[in-house]
Length: 583
Image (cartoon, rainbow, N blue to C red; front, side, top):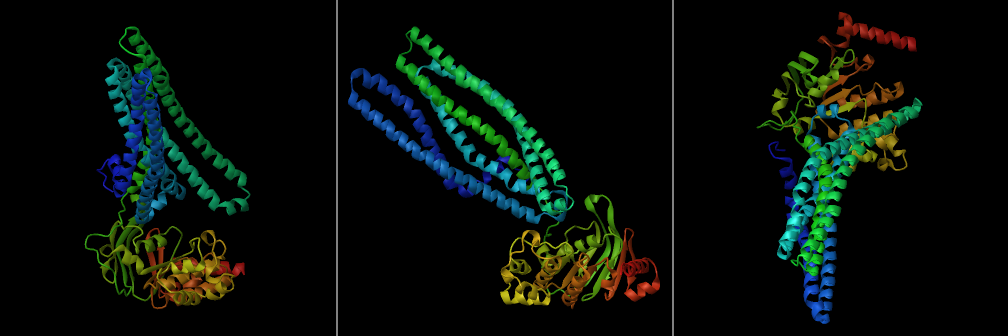
């Protein structure tokens, strides 16, 4: 999104695809304003010409005309209420579509630093207030300007002194609105932030409800939520205090004092013989018409502060640019063999603590390379650099001699499959989750992938088979079943490069053996990187790489590393001894 454009210009650009409907809404709004302006003049003409002369037939014709006029006004009001809100919904949907698409393009680092509930708040709650502004804002402003200017002109045509009395209040009104707007905007934004925090806490607490119950910490979660709720309540109170100051002073200036001034000025002019009673009645009617735009402007200020606070938070996300994008001239990565080479690769998160420093590693096509070592040594980070989930700071990574920064992200990631310890399943059916590996796959291909992942028989035992719902994050399935569904998903994707990130470390021994067989089947003929803490599971790897905070310490086969001694041998002996003691 263009950062040089002002927020208002960007906001206005969303009206363009729906301009015809928006124009019709504004036209209906102008007719409402015309009716409001016509009524006082029709009343004045009736009182001055028909009643004094006894023209009662024309009087009732005028009354009928007024009734028809207000029936039409009701139709115009229906139109702008229904279609005006519809325009607002269209704009909200367009903004939400753009925001969601933009979120899909943001890198892992964005999600590392933003809580899910806070992001959801920007996609939902914030944009609802934008909808209200999108509908009522232009409409209220348009009607207000027409009614306000029209009222002043028509009162001028009756008595210029009365128009002047009305105009005296305009500078005070404008000053009050401008003075209040800034404070209201700040408090409205604070409310948005507190709402986002509550959503984030809710998302975290609901997702962790089972953990809270397991540790009997329900009361702690309740107290923690109360704190956030109190912060929200305080922010809301400050906002309403600002709104109360704004509305009460505007009421005093316009609703009360203005009526007193008009009656006083009109009475004075009648005493001087410079104004008639029908003219005073008409001016009073125009005061009511004059007040209509003021109330609309008051509503507009409230909608503007909340709507633009939400829109500014929308723009904050939209103006974030990913540093991981396709470069000009990027080519598709096709017919991949799977030779991967790290050359002098260094990486750090947020340019802070270095995680990988000057890594050199060659992974031949079709071979299985195991990465072992202490936690936080950079094993997972190294694997996440291959599909460019993060961007390297120095050096290069090539696949089949092509720098991964020279190929399109879509083609790069299409050729890489990842199986993680923490499996994520979408809240749908088992079939949906398997087909996520290749959305255009057939049912027979899905079933074949499930067979190869050794999950087909388990699925067929369920009442709904492949149509069985997995629940939130796959809660209705066991850990081993979820893992095998994720493996079936990769079988369906059929990538030439495979990353297995501690895929069996959280499973029991019997389930691990099943998963291990499925993973061996999956790895056959593919370039495979395996991250494992259980060293017994990677003894058959073509090469084992030992990584610590200081980089690559050792590399070789299982037998070579044991014979050589060093860190791998110590880790293996320690695990083997622990296993024997546990047995």
